[in-house]
Length: 471
Image (cartoon, rainbow, N blue to C red; front, side, top):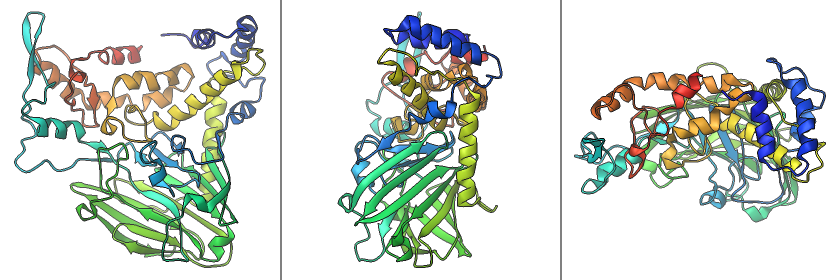
């Protein structure tokens, strides 16, 4: 196992800092303060270190939405802090709401036997071994096995008009955009003017629940001209993880709507999940079509605050309040940044030092919200679907083992039990190929079934990883 000290020294030296002699001594001083198993409080200001790298956005960039999350659940928003302009991002970096449990499998075409894929035989050290690498003559089955299951976009949440027939807000309606992701608190604050009126939206994810808190401040709320819309799609293996053209293939049932609380049951083929919404004040929730609902309404005060939770089971318990969720997020991220390892390079004279420090901070945040859950991470975490949302097991090594080196081992340990859960399938795969022990899959969903691919089933680089993890 690489020591924490050697890992951090390698990190800085590999960056090729011109002021390496100075930077090395500064880093050693930092490590001396932080080298104990408890990472004693350092001499420098951790809040300042983290906060100076807060991402800031002043215009719409389809490749740069911002995400809040907790490792199990993530929400990616546009310049409004919500998902108001999904069309502007859908072919660049789609705006999704994703979880570790949210998966969907489309029914197999009629008459298709899903366990009948023919294998291609390869000479392997003098014997023939079959691998699922060819689609020739079986394209329909090959593609169905690759695309299912796929990760699911759980629901789109965005601002909309309420005072006109046309409810969509246009990008051109916004001006004076100032958006900042507060890394120290895990809160995304988005300020802008809508038709000249100021609007402030705050967004955060609860650290222990698959739940989003939203606060909208504007006179337009009081006047009943601005509301929040919830839309629910059918599942898709596409990068967007959503199919908006199949309204008849899924159901959105409003099973409760009273006293500031609404509960929905979502059904997609054999899959089911639940959405719970809670708000305070005079707002009300109304259905606007089969899979869309609107939260808004006139009333005293210029504030609309709510929480929305997602779950594979009914959410029978009371939901935390909006303000309590923001406070829980702040407490969680304060602990995250205060207790783990850090690299502080502000005193380095090399012009590249601040950029290296920025990348260290942002990569720690991103992997914490995307890759610290109960399953190995996919290449794009909980942002969008890449390879249908399935995880490639080499990503587990790349995206999560570093938690141990930053003294955040618990974030990595959450996903290790997944290997035990699929061990029977891994043993069966090894046995079918004439090998002893277990053969871990390459491109895989939560059920542990290796996906067919022209090259993936032949690769073995993921096999030694559990041995490395055990060390």
